Length: 469
Image 1 (cartoon, rainbow, N blue to C red):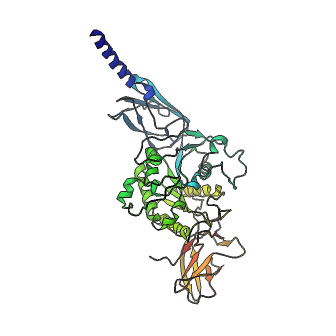
Image 2 (cartoon, one colour):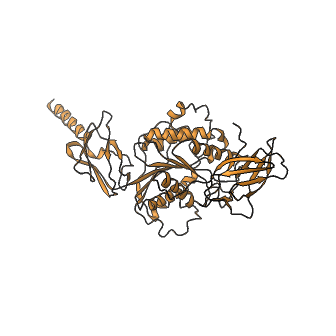
Image 3 (tube, rainbow, N blue to C red):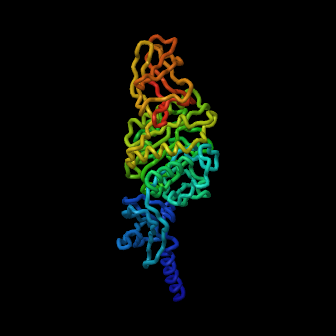
């Protein structure tokens, strides 16, 4: 009997010790060596203990300001620390049961961290063909640019953990990362005086927007009735499934903003894209508890779309940029070298235009002008339609003649039109067979590439004036 009691006591003691094993202390993978944390901010730290612990956290930038926090009955804990302006590198140490060191995160830099998301044109990496980056010998030689690539995963319910790790920029690590995101980060790094930039890549080719919207937003915004069953394929299609597995696990991580390149997979359901995109942005902002700047790419021309689906989708994207604050849209209709390929291999300027948008709006670099000219107004003058734009300087044509204008007649029919630039910078548009025009369109098709550019080299965005309200 004594042996049994001794055995049970020993077993209980062993179980208690096992429950305190520092090896079972878990941090989210995004809080790991080589991370870039948001500088000069209140950031959240969180994780899981083997049992209910009193935890002590020491940050090397403030070694005398020890943080104390206890895990709850679910073994989860979270706390906040204030990060410095200086870039580092720094270390964070986590002490658990009996004051034992249970984790140490090293080589942390303080800088600007951005989430980069979307479908295949965001996922497009350096292993694929990239035609506007020729010399890579020194391109990746910057240890202040760092990547965290979220492993592809989908889930019917929100999950807490993801797979991935922070990697320092090098020829080896950059090859498998988004070209658009890298070029965005590189220009941001240069524009902010070589400040560290962290890029979190959470993307999946072929995905529609519905899987990226959280379930609460879908229900609250009453969007479920608008989301139709998607055809099963090689990419996840279930509502909220990618948000649950690839966004929700990182909503505790403080970021500066989001860049987004997606829409191609929604071209056949373009009529509701603006509503869903608007809701997705606001849902992400609520999840991150931050009024995140959100900069995105208008889908590029491609000859493979049916009807005028891409034109209508671009219009929906432009609506979001025009109506939702702290957003910005870059026009890339000129950055296509093969209209039969839905994945343009010109990616450098896409990322750089996104960076210009961030430098202007998020970092207040007043000398940068990142906005493509847009339609401002139009008026009918006899047989002509006079178009006024928001162009900086006078528009210039890069082709022999201005193309892709159409005039709308009283019956709503479209007619190819000729256009010329007036002395005051307005555009005069006329169609030979139309005596009484009522509207005008420019580049309003699936694959029209713009040929009018402002003094900053940015293309005039596609538009139409005959949209039914």
